[in-house]
Image 1 (cartoon, rainbow, N blue to C red):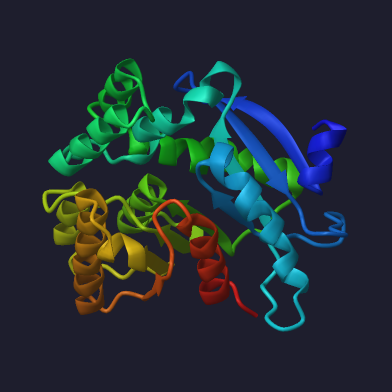
Image 2 (image 1 turned 90 degrees about the horizontal axis):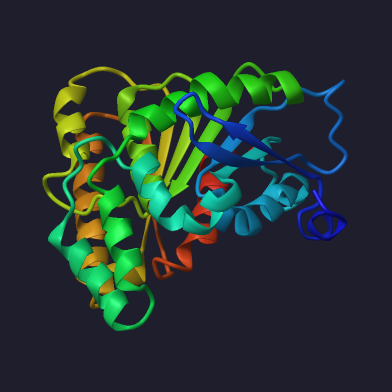
Length: 284
């Protein structure tokens, strides 16, 4: 990375990796201050939406040295998009983070249309955003994380053999729920912030019905935001309502799940949600 970026994101390396599916990803790897891979092997915490999230989450790696609430050591792997794709990260994430066959909720379409009317997106950008939601491949992206990226991280950073984590927010949170429900064995803990379970016909509910009595060893921590629930945007109201339903059903299954309500909006909640995940799932 450049000297300027090193000043903003200390102890962070950057590389790019093309998946077997032909997609280019940018990867930021942040290690704790004083990290020596020759003497210490740490687990990795994978953070989704790296183009947006890395600046708000990677600096929290200093919590490992907080004397008032120590967090178990980890190195952070933030995953985003590279090259020309980086400027389109907010629509490409739809392809990668949303489960196959996930219905596109009317409330989401309405929210995108409001964005066009407010000038936040052009009509072309809105159409491209929705187009990605009609052909989604979370399973392929999960395979990329576990079978392609993780072996590279394991080789280059000599990570521990266990204790790895995954954190996603919004559609990243939907991906986190999907990953937990698939029973992926790579992750010891999974954080799902304001997961984008937009409709009652979400694939997440289909996965829940298939869960049965299968035990899931990974810890799951779910957060929602108070102002999503109490605000006047239907899409955020739906997300909180459906997430609450998911939590109730998981609790009925006896799943190892924890949750928290944060005093944030959907946009401001990412960092608070990640910190809640660290404090709940990775505290010493």
